[in-house]
Each structure stands twice: as structure tokens, then as C-alpha cells.
Image 1 (cartoon, rainbow, N blue to C red):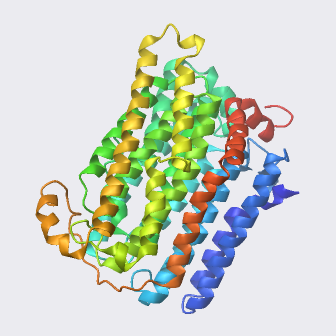
Image 2 (image 1 turned 180 degrees about the vertical axis):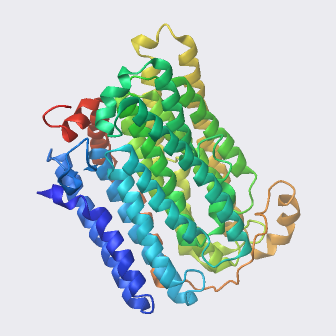
Image 3 (image 1 turned 90 degrees about the horizontal axis):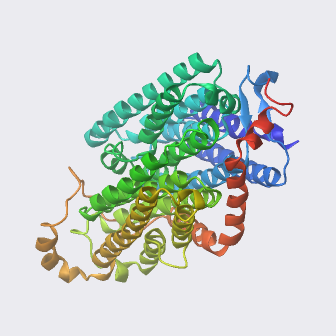
Length: 531
């Protein structure tokens, strides 16, 4: 019965986008349509998650064309939790954007453009999570990317246009790798259905498998912003309006991570690239956080921490155990929420303080204690301070790595154990540096008094970098209620991830158990066996 709800998570945002476009001159109507659509998707995603966890089949053959000939939409436990958390984040950010738009009279986010683009982006994200074949996954990526081009360049400033050009070029290169991989996979196996590929890929020569595997990893690695394919992100994301940056940072890179999880567990389950993924994960952590350490602008600092913490997820995927995947799933949910929250809070800081640089901000704790709390809680969470979800996720990942290093089959591979140990150490160091970078910003922007600003400025300018062509915003000293309420709601969600860590981890364990055994996914798509 619930299977009929699966197409609605994509169909409703697309219909909502069309309606919002028609209602271009009616701002309130657009806001109502967009909010109602995403609220409906949140409810549908919650229903699907409960149904999937109860064992109810949630596979839909679009148009009645059965797999492998037609488009198949599949919701398993991993898809369900990704749908729910992304729908919640998209809804909350939309409320924040509406509040900002009303306060600014829609100078930064023209309603007639923003709402249709935002809903199309949402449809692309949801489609990517439920795609049962590689080509539909590609379509989901292209839908969200086409909308993101528009959202990234809202306002048409020179800085945003330049960032948009870089983003478009990188995205096109990534799509070219992805499309080439799809063509080669189809030519080699005669299918792009992921369940069927889990069987047919294993029949190919090992060198052919490796080439196809690497092509997909490069495509998804660019989208996920893993080192050394992450160079584009810190210069692209910070230029957009605060709500757009928050969605991009929180969600878009995680779609790439999701695609890597699917690739590693379903299509190339027998092809082992553990060492490569382990090294890439460790380098992504360290290079990203060292970049963050040199930033004076909080938007760029958070963009570098975003890159850095993708490394934790890649590490969990590289471990490849049930605990590793469970911890990765939990950490993805945590990071989507916390990173989005920090960018929304940054929007409030920029609005209240008139800047986002530690060289221009001071005295915000006295001026707005509540804003200080809104930043402080997710900052501690991202830094991995116990008992927050960031700490729990990292501990889960480190335990998974330690268990895998101590496994009997690793006893004769001392070099692999050494690599894993070094990556775990890199993760611990990254967490400490993250905490230092964020608390340094909090100390300078909130704790430091306005009278101390001049004394610190000359010291800081020598050790940290300002954002290129950073603009100064006129401080309003007031923040719209909707923006504060939306940010507060996400801060509460981050705290709930800690309070309900036990049930969430148990769900992640069940999702990971399904991932470890590709036959579970195959049986969903082909109940009678692969033909």
C-alpha cells in the first residue's frame, strides 16, 4: 500500500515547481505551495521509513514496466532515512528563506525564481535517493544540478556569476565521467539496473571492473567533494545567499556520498578498493581542516570543514563492515543537520553583525546571547565534543576501524592495519582542529568586546585569509522571527540526534545489515529472482 507513495516524493515537488512558476506574481501563494509540498514530503518520508523498517516492500515499477526494462524506484532503509532527513532540512531551510525574503523584500532571492528552482532541486535530491538504476540516478543528479545553477547565481552579482561558472564546469566534468561510465557499463553488461548489475558486474574481467569502478568513483567523488576533487567547493558555496549555501553544504555533497555507498555495497561489492578509499578519506580530513584553519571568514571556514568531514564518511565506507556502514549512516544524518544549522546561523551572524569575518566581528555575545547559543551548540557538535552526535558518530567510525584492523583476516596485513591506524589518528586530529577553528571564531566574534577589535586585527590579518572580494553587509541588529525559529528548530534536531542516538543507531545497524548483503536489495527489485 505504501509503495504507491514512493513516486510522490519526486512528483509533488515537480508539480509544486510548476505551480509556483504559474503563481510567479503571487508571492504568498508561492510560499504556501512550496511549504505545503515539502511538509507533505516529510510526512510521506516518515511513513515510508516506518513501513520499510517493518519489512513492507516499497518498490515501484514506473509505468508498469517491470525491471530490468523499466524505471524502478526503490526505497530501502538507507533511502528512507536519507529521504526523511533531507526533506526535514529542505523544509526548515525554506522557512528560513521565506523569512529572509520577506525581511529583505526578496532582493537576494526573487520569489518567482527561487521557489520553482528550490522545488526542482528537492525533486532531484529525492529522485537520486530512490533511483533503482544508474541512468535514473544520473537524471536525479542533473535535475538537482540544473536547479543549483540558478540558485547559486541568484542576485546576479559578479562574484556569484564567477562562482557559478566554476561550479557549472566542475559539475559538467563530473556528469561527463558519470555518463561515460554508464555507457561503458551498459556496453559491458547490457543493463543499468543496479540490482542486476550486482550480479553481472562480477562476471566481467577484473581489469574491466576496476576501470568502471574508478570512473564511477571519480564522478561521485567530484560531487561529494573528496580530496583531491574538492578544490572547487570553498570558492563556490560561500557566495550564494545563506539559505542556498546551507542546502548546498548540508545536502548536495551527501548525495555524492550516498551514490558511493550504493556503488561500493551493491555494484562493486566484490571489487576491493579499501586502501584507496582509506587514504583518500584520511587526506580529505587533513587537507580540508588545514584549509579551514587559515580562514578568517566563517563561510569559507565552514566550507573547508565540510570537505574535511566528508573524509569521515569515506573512511567508514572504506572499512566496509556492518559497524562501519552503520556509523557512516549515522554520521551522514548528523552532518547534514549540523552543517546546515551552522550555515543558517552564519546567515544570522552576517545579518546581525554586518560581516562574517573574525577581523570585523566582536561583542555579539553581549548584543545577542541567543545567537551565541545557536552557533555554540552545533559548533561543539561538529567538533565532536561528548555527548553530542558528532562525538558518537566519530566513536562509532573509530571503533569500526579498530575492529576491522583487529579482525583475523587482517592479521597478515600489517601494512593495512598501519594505514587504518593512521587514518583513525588523522580523524582524531581533524576533530580537535575543527573544535579549535570553530571556538576561535566564537571567541573572536562573540566573547571579544568591541573595544578589543583593533588590537586583534593586526595580529589576525597576518595568519588568516579573508574571503576574496568579500562584501560588507549592513548590520540590521534585528533578525526576522522566521529565520531565528527555523535555525532554532534545526539546533533542536541536532540535539535530538544525541538524545535518540540509541534508536537511530539501531536503525542504522539494520540498514547496514541490508547493505552488507546485496541479495536483500536484489530480492526487493526481483522478488522471483533475476531473469
